[in-house]
Length: 159
Image (cartoon, rainbow, N blue to C red; front, top):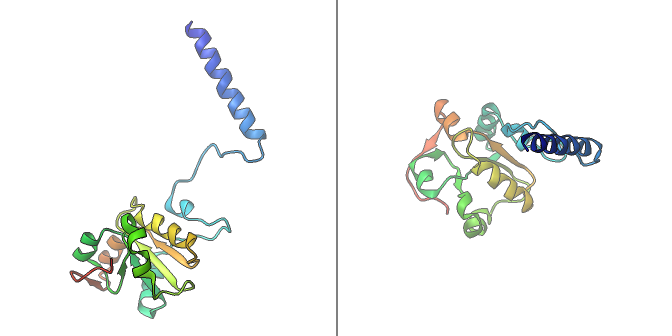
C-alpha cells in the first residue's frame, strides 16, 4: 500500500509539473518574494523608493508622505509632515485624508519594518483608486530615524 501511494503521488506531481510547463499561463516554480518584486507594476516599473530617493523628495518638497500605520503609532512618531492614512481604516478615512491631494501627486507610503505590508497594501489601494504616482518606502520609519531625518511626535493624526 505504501508503494502504491508513493507511485500515485509521484505520478500526480510529474503530471502537474508537465502540464504547468506546457500551459501558456504557467506558474513559476521559484518565486521572488522580495518587496521589490512584490511591488513591480505590470509595466515593469518598481514602486519602491530608496532612502536617498525618499530624502531627496522630502527636502525638495516634491512628494507627499503617507504613514500607513495605526493612528496611535503615528502619534508616537512619524516623518515630519507625513499624513496618516492607516491601512486598517482606509475606507473610513480615505476621503478626508486624500481630499486635497491631486491624483498626479507623488505619494510615498511607509510603515515600519522590512516585513511590514501596510505600506504595500495602502500603495496598491491608492494605485487602484487612481493615484498612479505612488511609491513605497520599505522599512521607511526605521530607516528615516536611523538617518536622523526630521520627525514629529504627538499631535493629531489626519485620520
